[in-house]
Image (cartoon, rainbow, N blue to C red; front, side, top):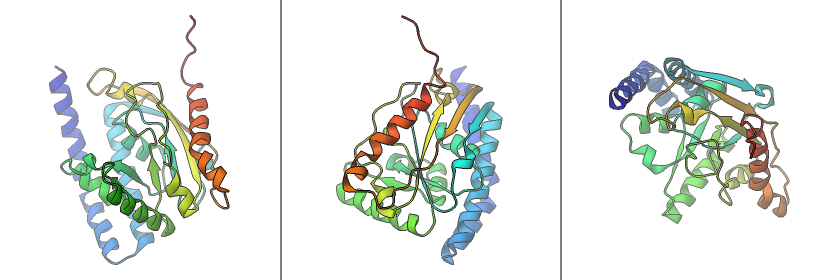
Length: 247
């Protein structure tokens, strides 16, 4: 039964990728013309279509707060990471702003999905290759300066539950190097959409957008403490959604 449910999900998944094929063509066209603004607009349209369609089909009900905290211009969203569903949930929760992901290079190898994540201007990291990671970091910095935005999951892997792992040191250097605002995001409940039972399930997801944090003119000490500060904000946000357990 679980296998059948998962096969059904993957059929949905690739069906919705097929629905944005014309958007992908236009993304490639604008990229070849080096028209960054038009490319960002087309990416955002495709992200809206794919994320919202997939979440609706799966029965994911989003409760989003704090959209007013997202400024104009490029930003780095920073979030805890619970599930494979975090990516489509991000697309569904945040309208009108293009963003890619800083992702493990394993995602790039997935048929169709890897190219789709690349198309939205994601950067793939090879963690065991320092030189490749440095090149990816430099590419991401340049894209931020050109107006593209990113989402980072500094835990480095899915928690598969409500508990949050520690942020990797230096994970926000991309934002501080480019001097763009950091937007902390607390999400909760995406693990219930898949990881909890091993197949796609309807669920409610909380998505809280915290006030932006400027990274311009930070001292060396402030830059070094930024990841810890953002982690504390996101952890505090989780306490609003996770019931207190009595001993």
